[in-house]
Image (cartoon, rainbow, N blue to C red):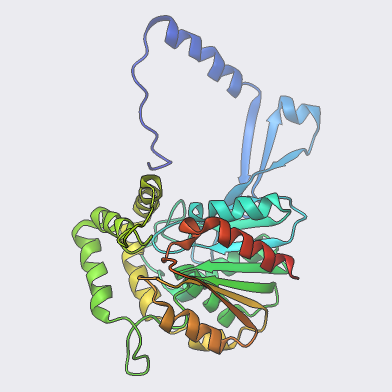
Length: 338
């Protein structure tokens, strides 16, 4: 459901309708001004509350930051404000909701957890241009800087792993203490003469064709098939898990999701990985059919000097859901290690 277009309620008649009016009137009474400051995620109210204490403000657990090219990036900010920050970058074509289990777990253990919707995805602006790794990385930098995060752990899943790698390549690690790559597309997915173990361009062309023809069905096919490993014998993938993948995917802008296929498949992140100079945890499913482990996690582990590789035997691509408790525990152990 588009959060900006709530369904019209059923018609109300008689006393049922009249009873509701005073409730809404009471909620609205006394609120003279509501100000939302993007990036600071602060609401300031006036009226009765302001009279009780001038200058009182409330910090929300979500908000927006605006990039230099005018894109509004939505983020959620959970957990204690004095906790060390852990910043999550999501996969294609999902959004920050895909990290809810990991965020809940780490926030409950004292960490401040932040996840944003990539440009063109979720509640962020549906961009026509700039749907590439450089812009993704710069958008992440905008979130980190405007929230003034330091000593942060970056966690990137799939395309988000590429985003995190490009962030390090472009912005360094001055604000970063650790990195975790989960099912990440690093260093390069596409098969090329220099990357013979990569995935054929035909696979990505097929994704583009499916996106243009019927992207809703494409997302259902991915959820029913390789993403969660539901096409494997004895796989146990709930309908709710598959439905959530489809729902988040359909919230992405069509153009942004289409462009992102090129971004996650054709961007060479090898040089970015060589610039990692903080402890790095690499986690990957051993049976990942979307981002095969041989030309991703294994190669990234060889490139990043201070890295640890953990393989989930038989794990599919979507281990953030299928192996959520194992991943939660491994991430908590990692962030606790500082």
